[in-house]
Image 1 (cartoon, rainbow, N blue to C red):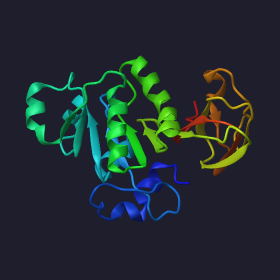
Image 2: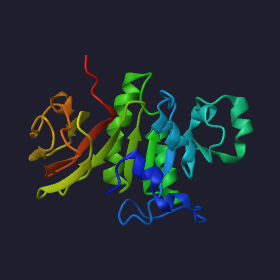
Image 3: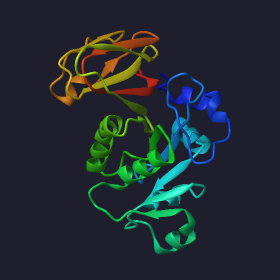
Length: 242
């Protein structure tokens, strides 16, 4: 399973031209790994990793006014309420207006990219600024994994989130790459069994989100055994000593 920014960028399949009509495949197998970027209007990418993901993505879809941060985008999707009129005119050829208000622009852009054939979607600029938007966007990762059957991946200026959808019937073990000192947080989305190896503190079926935060990797990898869904956050850099 490819679940780090470095593996996405270094994938050989990502270096080949996009086939007409979009892409298929996912993380499995290593030969069909493809990703697109959805850029939201939160805190702009500043760390080297999200900046590189944005610059090297085969396809970029902006949520409304995020096009002001990425004038080379392939598509702009949203209800148009936050994009200036001059920008709508300038990017008219790639602007896709979706007026329904049941979903936010991030979900509208996700549905658009799924229809294009993408199964690995990287979200940038989806945190920061308004805290309610940040919480909402992070929680949507689990919805996208469950309902759309994609591999969503959210990179911020500090680390990245990856949701894991379990069997909900029996435990399964998932391996994650890490490094000693890397800060790790786990968020439980319905697991009644949740155990870890390779982290400083043993996990358990957390009932509150704060309980799974502020853990730390002690090796080059760690494992999570769970019988349901959970969200993993890892930092780019290790904990700094005071």
